[in-house]
Length: 450
Image (spheres, rainbow, N blue to C red):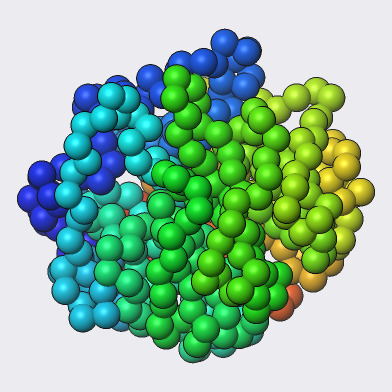
């Protein structure tokens, strides 16, 4: 058994937090996505992306996942330097005392079990059942970084680095916290992290965390951005009776301690990433493209004349007006030579155009930009065992080229660059977690995580 696994009996009821392919729960989840999608194949494909069927994780788990103790290159894994962060519930537990993770008792079966709880939406390249990992990373300067994710049994993990991502150390998170999907800091001390029915915040740089209840029932938050030490905005998905996921935005004005729902137009589809290039302009993307001009309080849908093939998962801005959004191209499963889905705005989200990206990168689903010039787009290859999809731009995302990913990474979950050329990446090598760091934006050093 891999050191990143715990027996399934450790989970209440002996069931993984996420349903196995082909199980009754899995079939029910599929029905959630299939119901009410009679508005066309394009929209149907976009919504399915947020059920985890677009991410490389789901695409390949349904094929031939690696055996639990197998590594894609055992000799290489053995030679990678190792850090001190842990992703097992026995080692971590998601509580200040370090006690093992205790899963919540199973829900009493409701009339419609598909909408009974916050949905499990995997972060491509991040944690998966049985294999803990980081899902997101942020750096407040060139030395101090925070990363969040999930342990092998579905609890939350948070870690800090004070040497630019060279070494990582677990920090206690509130007991009962589930997997965290995204993290953002308004300054060097105040940060918020969000996930499956959970929001946590810190006011001491990630050393201690407090839990807060999301205002939206059964929401899984996939993105968060903090514009200051007090103002944060998070985006995510909620289950809908007899239909696919809907999108929702939650807001905080006190550093993540309390949250309220933003006003969303009826019919807003699942939302993944969110970015705010100014104090008033915010953009959230997913199955819908939503723009706010009042700091996230109200939102307006925007469209592309030619439509979208796939749901968008991430958005980043290089100026108050210039933003780029990307998502994995679902057609890439059958044609690996395709580029990802990518769009760009030059007027703060009022209008959008398709953006050309390199071919053979269909599963890019994350974009990260620093200053006005340097951007990276990252994701997975279509085999799960090859090098991660990785692209770079030195002109603010106008033109892109493929470049070598951090050595050994087959999937990149997230990347953070506090300044140009100084970057930290988190992801996987096969099923196992590793991190990468670069001091020039071109060459990378990777570290295997235990």
